Amino acid sequence: MNRIPRLLSTLLTAGAFACAQAQSVVGTSFPANFPAIEDTSLAKPVIGFGAAGPIARTPVIFLHGNNDTPFPTACNPFGRVQAFAQYLADRGYATSELWALGYQGDQCNLATDQTNRSRIAHTVAANVPDLSRFVAAVLAYTGAHEVDIVAHSLGVPLAREWMRQEDADQKVRRFVAIDGPNHGIINCSPNPLNYFQLPAAGGFTPASEVCKEFGSPDTPFLKRLNRGDDRPSPARVLVIRNADKSFVYFPIQDGAIAPVPAEDSFGRATDFSHSARLEGAAELNLIGQGAFDPILGTSHLGILNSPQTWEATFEFLTARPRR
Image (spheres, rainbow, N blue to C red):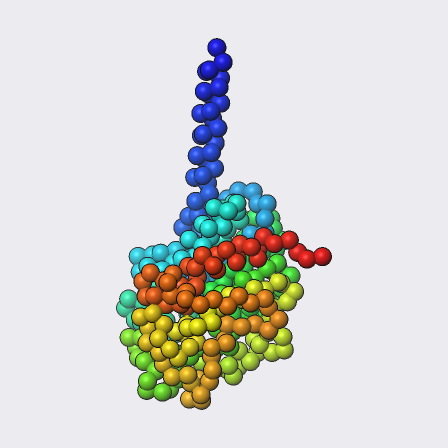
């Protein structure tokens, strides 16, 4: 006589579990009632992801690097931020607590002109307004008072510059800075051996907009950003960096990408290998990260897709504050 209620209870439990499982899948869009945010430099809505629902944790905002997207698109096969967010969802984060901003569009404009990689739309200066509006929208939508930020490559100084410009440290609880160009990149020298200057390789000449920001530790942008203590405080910060190779910092082969001379945009010999470091931040140094880039085999891209990076980030974001 009790089999029917028991069976019904089992079915309801299974249905609830299946629903919870479906809700834990990180998507590729924003909720229908999330405000549309226009990309300042591209004049079209930003892309990204997030979800409706209650929150129990501090919302996490993911920021990708230059020439990337929050998820794979028709023009970009990388987009590993979504998989990173899914790792957190699989460990208890609600999808309503996981957000990403695509501040350079779907990258389809690179197909017609590779030099867009180094132009104004790909600079920090052009994208701070997008991040500012996005953080404000996430805070308003979720009802949270602060966010955590997980950023890779260009996303790291983007977050730092936004915090600097708006004195927004109090809006960021914890910040994970993954292999970011905090002290410049190696790809901007005038040396003829720097093939990144070629239009087909992105046009990273000393005069390009991205190189004006990152071509040397001594650019006006980086000198201003790193003045004094270069750690954004009081947010707790974890730097995760490649300690052996990374094609934007080290003058050695990184997967399929050949090395360029260790010179800055002024033609001066410069060691960029420590560029990802931030004074005063906790630091995790990794090696062999090219194993996690299935397309180019590079450490700079692989570190974003690394189980070591994902685990360290989860532990950092969920650790209880020290008394």
